Image (cartoon, rainbow, N blue to C red; front, side, top):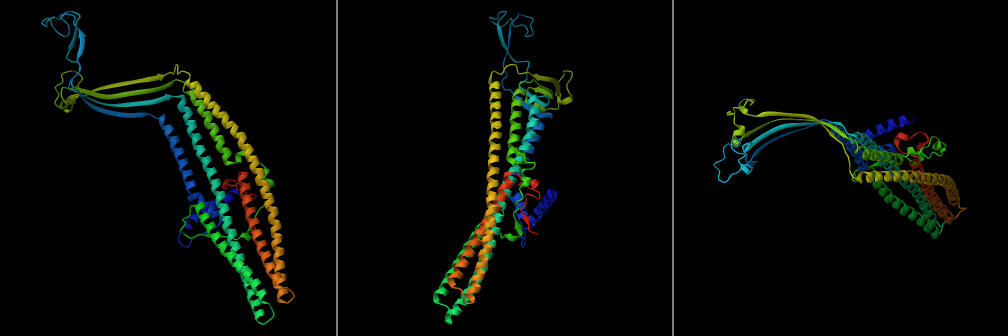
Length: 485
């Protein structure tokens, strides 16, 4: 049954999309839910969060792939720094400086920099590959857990959307049915009013009888108009929950008589687990993330091993133009043709070993462990809150079912009283006061019945949410609102 429902929901998504076309504005409950899950802002943002999480995973994976960068530079030094050395007497590589006045052996000499030309060009390629990093390995696990967190939060968001859409849908359905009942009651009382008016003209009824029926008729018309406005407000609320265009018409398909609230709740406790709740799953994922945060703090003390390679070419020239010149004036061996660019290369392995980082890392670990304890306490609080919610929802649903049964019986009794009272009045053995009282009681009984029916449906939705059975993937034949057919 679960898979049949999922297939039906997937089908209704496409049907809900077609409903946006002109002439296709009719929605069943399943189509309202499907449309909301596909178009509501909260649902779209939840889907974007999942895409962001997937991108975060790919970003983390990319850190472990080879990192390649290229660089090129041209440097001009209008005034090169001096070359400093000590004078060791004639015969040194500086030549004979005996002619310099006052120069003694051991003096410091600031000579022209003959080791570097004024202009230089460099072009290179750098490659780095991470071989081992404990934090990176933990980061990969954390990235996947972060993606799982986005999925669980999406489920929680969808549950809230389904709950709100179902309540708004039932409100519209109830109000529409009440408007129909008011119209039927108005037709019946209007017929009585015309008959009483005719009897009054012929002297068989008093004027006060006509006035009593007229007051009842006016009250019915006023109540109907009130519920028509209330129904319009309910439709706007449903559009808001679905993110349906507020300026486009929408028609809710279905009748309240076709709905029946399933009171078989024995299966709720069978196989019940706190993990059925999306909010509990979210807290579990947060717990895993916090544990990974602690592991990451420890991993920062593990040595990091990486490999690197640097490749490139370099040249120097007395002028900027000489760097780009193709006219070779180099006489040194190893020059690369007329371009005068010399290649260089460097490869190696780097090992970074954290030896002492003070006490800051220890305190960071202590903070993360305390946060984990807070999450553990959160499980206790959440389980208690879920138990309380289930108890409240169960009691509310039980009370709503009992109230519904009582109000249904009252409606039937009030209907029989109104029917018999009208027959007696038409046969001359009853009074108009009895008829108007019976009609007022019937109207009140009908109002109470549909209020109780709406409360029962809402209580059923809240009960499904309390047991974590509101999402489409957890629907089954015992948790749906079934049709009498």
